[in-house]
Length: 151
Image 1 (cartoon, rainbow, N blue to C red):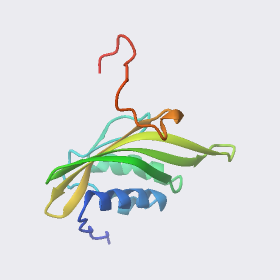
Image 2: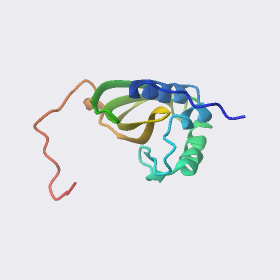
Image 3: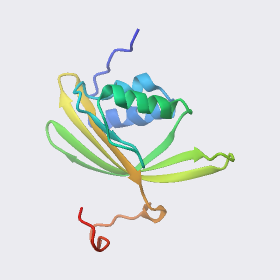
Image 4: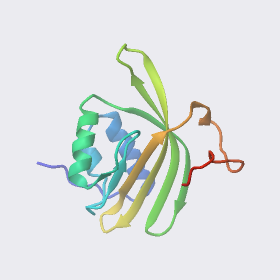
């Protein structure tokens, strides 16, 4: 029998539950955090854009089948309105390589949440590799994109 959805009173509660589900490799808990909207989107580091519950469940089922993911969110920046909340953060992911060595991978993460009848839910999770030197810094100006790149 599937778990009932929890009513999350804040986007921060959903975000905490998101990383908690990763920490416990709990795919069912992970999937309950997503909006019921079929247009939900997840973009894992170095991965394709994944749209919809079925596709996200399949990809994350494969990821979480390898075991827990230890993530430490930090430097969380929040822009919130009455019905939407955008979180930009750095996540340090602690993994073991094929030789058993512990590696810390830094990710730039954007999580977008919407508020609906069942409380706050996740509609987008986007993670991309971040340079190691980005941890502990906050660049608010002075960024110059590489030449010939339109973004």
